[in-house]
Length: 243
Image (cartoon, rainbow, N blue to C red):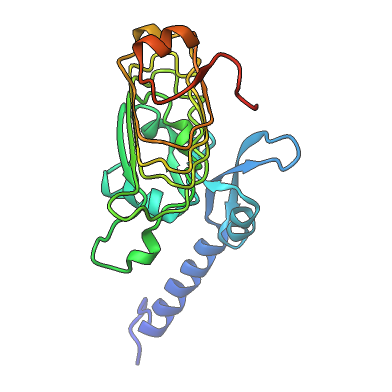
């Protein structure tokens, strides 16, 4: 005969499972919803079975106050993880972390002992939110691997030192917004044909070290001044930028 007040193990199990199911169905998580028409961000709460729909839409977990930067290139994001700026491969990094970074060195190819083919960089989307950068280096050495074709540095007004190595697919480089730029190094940039260095700061810059023999448009503040003070390997102009 069962004692009064005794609850069987099977009943306890049923109660535990029922509670777990109820909790999973009713538990909500914060999601930052992005309106596809206006771009407006709104913090909402969603149940687990609604979460995948929002993530597929482009929303992200967490409140909208926790702004995140889209970094779709796996090689780029993985290097940020190795540097301690991110912790999971999900195409996003916290904007509040990267916007404080002043020094950044990236390579378009690296071998961490796993599949190196997965770590060839071809997209720098997200770099625009590194808004405090002072020193930036991007290298494709030693093999020139990587398919980067564009580098947008127009948001980096605090940049003083820029070094690019063997990014052979970059044809245009606009540094006209980088008014604090002092040191410029471009090594083996064979594909570069247009360089805009007309940033109002040429007289304060040290002599640029440039290996880009195919430059046909080298725009500067003062062509005569650059001809006298910089390399005579290039023809300088004050108005040749195509954009």
